[in-house]
Image (tube, rainbow, N blue to C red):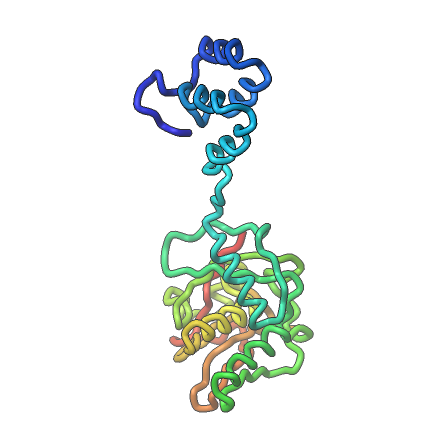
Length: 263
């Protein structure tokens, strides 16, 4: 609501409203009075005096702030739609996707996952981005069919969704050296393999650098068919982003999960 300098310039009183209707006629005055929250008595009088033919444009100008885009994530929605169009060949619309509250601690990034996206497709697109930058670089995965072997995922692409992830090069410091069995036995804290693939791709597109340059991310939101946890890393000796797996009890000071917060 607009703020005005004096009480007289605040909302019209009942008597003022009655006077408007009496002076300007019921139909026109009532239309304006519907929006009296946003205008002073003097402004309403001025609008009425310009005539009904111009009221539509006046309303539009007056009410524009009320209907302005107030979505704080609109730029990110558009950005991710472009990412999936340019690098995944997908036409997506994230306008209706619920965005969870952003955690207040640590560096975070918002990631959107489109409905129907598969791990195999994400890995293939990631590989193409790497080789386009350097033909010697590649994405290596331990199986030709990730979707068939990574069978349990905390979140899936049955519907489009958004998450906040820790956005550091290496895994979360708080979880380094902790096995999946200790840090995230139920798979409710860490990213899924699909989310890590998308995160790694967009990080490389933006920086031409890799996540997990020294360490390894346990994708604790996912499980291999045999119960093990998928993992991802960058291997500079082989010039490859690796998709592999590890036991739930495996631990190393350089390895850990990446926290994900969903709605």
